Amino acid sequence: MRINGNYLDLKESYLFSLIAKKVDEYKQNNPEKEIIRLGIGDVTLPLVSAVTKAMKKAVIEMENAETFMGYGEEQGYGFLRRAVCDYYEKKGVLLDETEVFISDGAKSDLGNILDIFGINNTVLIPDPVYPVYVDTNIMAGREITFINGNEDNSFLPLPDETTAGDIVYICSPNNPTGAVYTKEQLKIWVDWALERDAVILFDSAYEAFIRDENLPTSIYQIPGTKKCAIEFCSLSKTAGFTGTRCGYTVVPNELVREDIPLNRLWLRRQTTKFNGVPYIVQRGAKAVFTEQGLSQIRENIDYYLNNARIITETLLELGIWFTGGNNSPYIWLKCPDKMTSWEFFDLILDKYNIVGTPGVGFGKQGEGFFRLTAFANTDNVKIAMDRLKE
Ligand code: PLP
Image 1 (cartoon, rainbow, N blue to C red):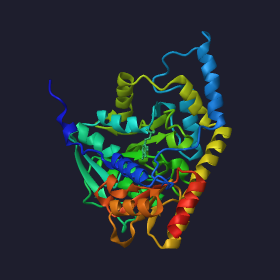
Image 2 (cartoon, protein in one colour):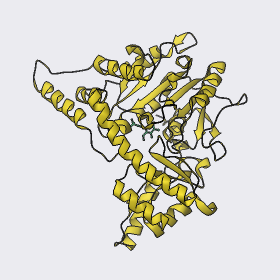
Image 3 (cartoon, rainbow, N blue to C red):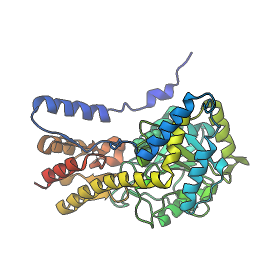
Image 4 (spheres, rainbow, N blue to C red):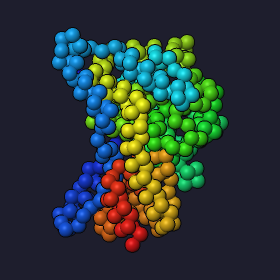
């Protein structure tokens, strides 16, 4: 037996363990200090009542032989796939139910989708980036090239004629930078992909944070995209499902390579290796898309966006360069005085008792930058920002 040696090529992820270690040490040495965590990548508000009500009802159904549900429909229950299609219709995107696959979250699908692509494809990944894109491709042994985000392109890199790649990841609104592509910018990516038969893997996990009506909340709002993109979405940040687990992936029927619809391959992959999301969870997910559910989750997202606004207003006042924070729960700031990401981490932990995430943990291009998140309690965000202003 031989192991998959590609795993040995993975870089150890010290980021969050090192942060935890530094914070623990600081707490031990300064027990009287109150630390405020603005590095959290998880939601803090609970599930909304529309969701829990639907889930409770589903639990009762599972209790009775007449309404009990065993294995579910292969791609997810029709009631949920229809709800997703209706949600997209409101964005001006018409989907067929066969194009929607319900999953236990975007992370699994983003990793698993690689099963349907040949190993010899080159992958193009923006830097800095959500680390899952890089690590899953290293595990598979695929060649990776990077396209750099930086201050000059406001961390929204765009391809030109020389940019190569068969599969490209785009995350908008972006984790970690909070930056959001405009329709015009996404069109440049779509044209680039169509020209060379590349496939875009579009991660829209944070689409619900977009409040600017001119910004795209789905890549399919760009004409022609159904021929070149798969979209991954999640209820994790949209509706507080990080611990409940549900997402959906759209594989358009028009997306065909080597005469084979990728939808067919993904269906085959999922039906072979995945047995679906719990009925109770899918009922809760369906409730997200009801009028009541959508209005309740909007309130929660508004709460986080208000936190983001408090942070961005402070940065503006302090004259610190940043992206994100509008239409996104992430704020990506440039460390002042040419500090490295970790120097800035140490400084604001020691001096202001604030914890954030060093940008260099998301890629080389993240060096000198720092991520704050809006998932904290508003009172704490205000205290943290007052400390920074002082
Ligand atoms: N995509 C991005 C950009 C994320 O930041 C996250 C979670 O943090 C995910 C996907 C994964 O979401 P899920 O909880 O649905 O697996």
